[in-house]
Image (cartoon, rainbow, N blue to C red; front, side, top):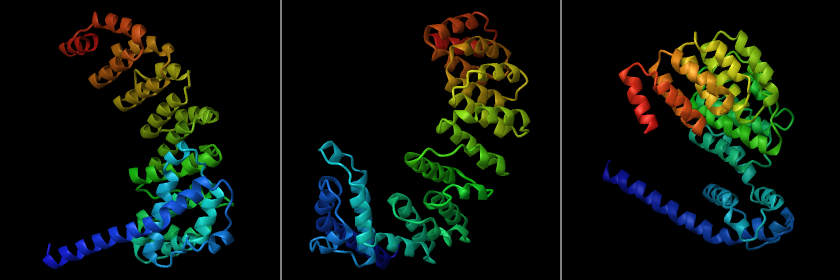
Length: 344
C-alpha cells in the first residue's frame, strides 16, 4: 500500500468516525424519547415543527441517521426500562426525514455496491416501501444483486407479496441466497402466517430451491403439508429432494416416519440412510427405538452406526438398554471401540 493511499484511507476513517459522533450527539436522545417514551403519536407535521429535530440533507447524514434509528429499534433495553416502541412514530420519523425516498433512489444507482446496500436497508427498515420500487433491481444484470432484490421484493409487494416465489430462482441458488430468503419469509411470517409452500414447490424446476422450500415447511411448522410431502416422496426420483423430505417430516413430528423408515432403510443409499436418522433425531419418538436397533444391525456404513449410537444416547435409560444389548453383539474392533466410548 502506498503512503498516499494509507493516509487517504486513514483520513476517511477519521472523517467517518467524526460524522458518526456528530449524528449521534444531534439525534440519539431525541430519537429514544420519540421512539420509546413519548407514549403518543407524533405526526409528521409536529416533527417538522420541532426545531431541534433537524431534517438531514446530505447523503452521509441520511445513511448514518438510518443506522442509528435501526440500532435503537433493535435495542430491547429501552423496553426493559419501561419504554414501548412506538411504531407510528417510527413510520412518521422515516417519512419526515425522507429516508424512504433516499434509499429508494439509491436502489437505482449504477454502483452495484450502493444498490445492494440500499436493498439491505429497505429490508431492515421494513416499513413504508412499496414493492414496485424494486422493479429495476429485480432484473439487474448482476446475479447476486438481482436475487437479493427479488427476495426483498417478496416482502414489500402489497398486492401479491408472494408472487415472486412463482418466478423461480437462478440455478446458482447458494447458501447466502437461502439465508436472505429465509430472513425475508421469517419477517413476513411475524406479520401474518405465510401460506403453505407446496404451491411453489410444485412449480419450481430448480432442485436446490425446491429443497429449500421443503426445509422451510419444517421451520414454519406447516403440518397441513404432510400429505403432500408423502406423495412427493413416493413420486420424486431425485435423491437430494427425497432426503430433504425425510428430514422435514421429522421436523414436523410425523410419527409415521418410523414406518416409512422401516420400509426404506435397508435398501437405501448412505445418503438417504443419513437423512432417515436425522429425521428420526428431529422426531425423537420412543416408537423409533426398535427400528434404531434393527437399523444399527442392518447398515453397512460405520458413519450411520455412529449416528444411531449418538441418537440412542439421547433417549436416556431406554436408549442405554438398547446400546448395552447391541454392544454384546459387536463383531468388529470398530464397534467395540464405539460402544466402549458410548457406554463409559
